[in-house]
Image 1 (cartoon, rainbow, N blue to C red):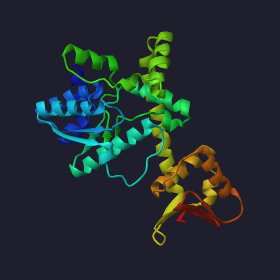
Image 2: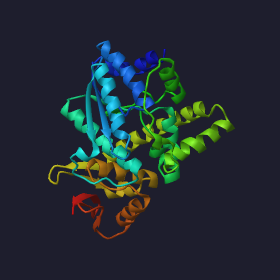
Image 3: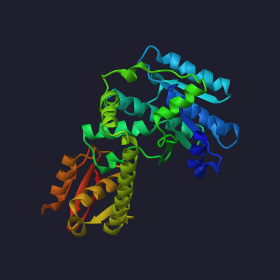
Image 4: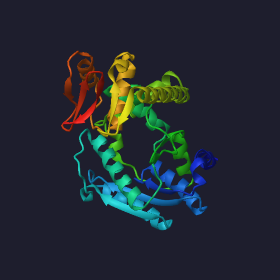
Length: 322
């Protein structure tokens, strides 16, 4: 029944018989997803490759990787295992250990995606992961886009379990005597996510047992509103900016831009920087700084990062290389 529900939600990609990369950690969530995708593989509906990254942060992590390798061999699924120290990185990752671990995994998954000419990377995030992400981002500070959390389909990533509850995953594994590994660091109060999972969410469930259902409904509304704002931002960008064949850049009408609502101004700037592949931290302080520059009467340029500036000349503005 559970697998049928998951398959119905994935039907939109199954008619292409896609090649899917699975992020396999050996934990209950990814093992559950492995068994679901392996069923589709056996039915000749997908091709499946499992990928595991040993972060080398725990002494047990090598055993977890060996567990993943073994279940793949038992099911004739191609397995690719890497150690973090083996990854060839062209950039340095910053942030918490959680952030760095996620970035390392995504780096490996995207690398394998290209090497194997695959279509998707399947990740095992479920409904409770969404809840953790929501409160984690609130505590750290976020935008409406941040509150929409993870998307079911965010190419090349898909998250087939996002609408599934953790208890349903554990019930299936236990009822079918399916083994998995436990990462003891998931119980450590050292990590903010763990504290949210252990202390915040249980209290909300005590306040109202319908919390999970209400949360899912609220998240759906937030995502719908964010989708609308994204479409409005794109339409506004297309109205204000034209592509310059001479400069190979987008150039905007400053007068039209200044007349926009402040929220839309910031969204259009972020959209512009993403279009021009400008790497930056979209903090409120940086965006306000850029807006002050654009609204003052003097021309010139303002630095965004080491490689890019934003310029304005008469009624035109855009990005240029530093």
